Amino acid sequence: MTDVLTFGEAMVSLRADQPIRTGGTLRMSVAGAEANVAIGLARLGHQVRWVGLTGADEFGALVLRTLRAEGVRVEPERAEGPTGVIVFEPRISDLTRVSYYRAGSAGSRIGPQHLGAALAESPRVMHATGVTAALGAAPLAAVSSAVARAAREGTTVAFDVNYRSKLWSRKAAAAALRPLMPSVDVLVASDDELDLAAPPGTVSEAERVEALLVSGVREVVVKRGADGAEVFDASGSTARPAVPVTVKDTVGAGDAFVAGYLSGLLDGEDIEGRLERAVTVSAFAVGSAGDWEGLPARDELELLRVTPGSTLR
Image (tube, rainbow, N blue to C red; front, side, top):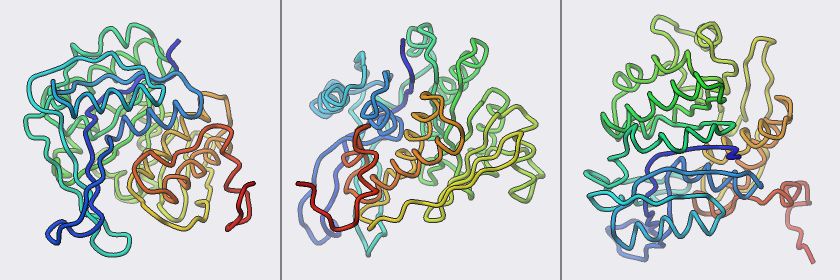
């Protein structure tokens, strides 16, 4: 049985070692919010299926090869258009500039018709994000139909707002995402994203959380960056500080958090246990370079308890 089904656009990532206009080198890998979550969950021992489209090019081959190598189940489908590319450019300290080269990409052509077979397998959790919803009419339809079908069939629906200002406006995001909320069980959002999911007219965080819970969301998970995270449900709230680590790269930390939280959910952990795993996996991401490369295997989750600076011999 599939533990988690997720879907969206996976791209080739190019990471610069210095500002692009000054030259330097680019390191090639794979990125994409849903792919990052899929890899994180697979490393923790869960059965994960990713659905997406790639171009009939070598970049697409790299995406599929990487996901398979990480233990993610993929059933490739090629589409017109190239595989998308995302470029990460360091500017100062922990500030990274991101550029997308995905207009007309194969991955942006995903639609409801590509998800039927995977949803028919009745995964335990169906995970979707606002990134895919922002890619166009067909991807938004894919998200909307998948969320509605999964909810009807009793699958736990997890949704990460994951707002990207370069993909759509806050007004467009709110108009698209708010109607999904009655079908969502676990909503994940940064504290500055809650207004995109909550009903209009709500102003404070407390009002937004309460309205989301009333609408049918079972758990509202609020990410607070370096301050950790807090989960709200019918019984109240539970907060957990972030795990302190030396920061190397914050890109992908939110996806790592989601992977850890869903892993705890799948394992039957209570909210405290889910938060503990979420902030732990996120700390691995923050303390490592790349979106997913430093994410832990299950037997590595305790490594952050080791005294900093230690060498394991």
